[in-house]
Image (cartoon, rainbow, N blue to C red):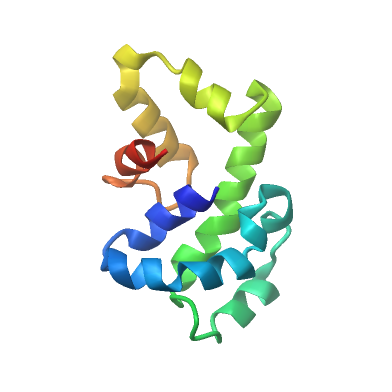
Length: 119
């Protein structure tokens, strides 16, 4: 979950800027525990928008609980997110990119393939 969010926030920004703020993200997003993050509502995200320790981009902030839900859905169906990724046919890696772009939030363009390289 943390790596997916990191990829989203790095898109279009200097990686060093995002990386320097990442410890605050880890704290504010409950160490990216999907079961906790998915419960973050609009009020919580609005409070995060006021905190200068993180990158205050509402679209990217909203993507975190949405992607947490995607991960939980995949875990429910496949046992774990890692199993889902590992069982995807290697000969159809672009299909996995497309799946993540379609079902994930802010995972389009190069974000999906770059995320997969990170994990």
